[in-house]
Length: 415
Image (tube, rainbow, N blue to C red):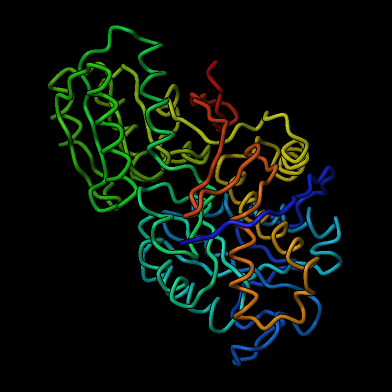
């Protein structure tokens, strides 16, 4: 079992602009290739770094249909890297991000983790993008005793994968019910619900179970459950079958590309009622998929760009300066994931200089340290349960608003 110890974390009050765009640019502190960290020794007892920087692995999807989500994570960690290095890094030693593209499949995540652990010699990993990938890749880190922080893994059972696996992304059991209740608040006459979910994706299957339980707990009738694949683009059959049953509410668990296409086709077929979507559509980039049809979709969120904490104010300012739009949830969670590593490393370094600690021991001690802390992040104050699940107090429900002139989407927090 994971045993917490006590540490004190710092609240950082200033921030600087992001160096590069989220899509795949590099900067002087960031590497995207393999074997790119200062510590490339194969000896497991090698120390962390030989040239004065601390390598932290980032395993996000930068290609495939999952890149809509993964690129937001990349943006978040790059802002965090600049932010913390400008504040002195880890007690004077800068952090260095090492990126590996997981793509959208389990094999990509497995390869990324193996490279980061064995070749790039990172002290810990933030990622992967999907829960489906986490169930395949996280056990690799667990066996190697390398800490992993999931920044967008919400499926049931993620933290239970192992002692070295934690997450800053709240589980679907906490977040999903909020959006159904918000829909009922908007229309108390809702009685009949059609449910859609991606049957080949573990997050979607986990989330739809929570959605369906919430629907029944609210005394509503599920008139149909329609299944699809995350690779699907044509939803005419499922959508028509559901609409023939005249639902008052539609609830979707899928990813941004497939879920966005489903939303668009439901609107094209004439559905005018409320649509609730899960965490997979929690990105303004979904506008590229469903355009004006996205308008009005309700999504529960674990991040609010107007959260009043000082760290979030600085993170938001940096994001707005770089992208001219509000930061999304996945960027905020990715920032928080990297922040946990930095603050845990600082606390550990004060006990014993981490540059003198053998890598395998450093990874183990870092894992213990990060689980013990409390962190004031863009998500608000967070901590971890003994098994590595995030403890978070603040959650929200948002509604998508689209602007056909600017071709942009934003989330409006519902009060």
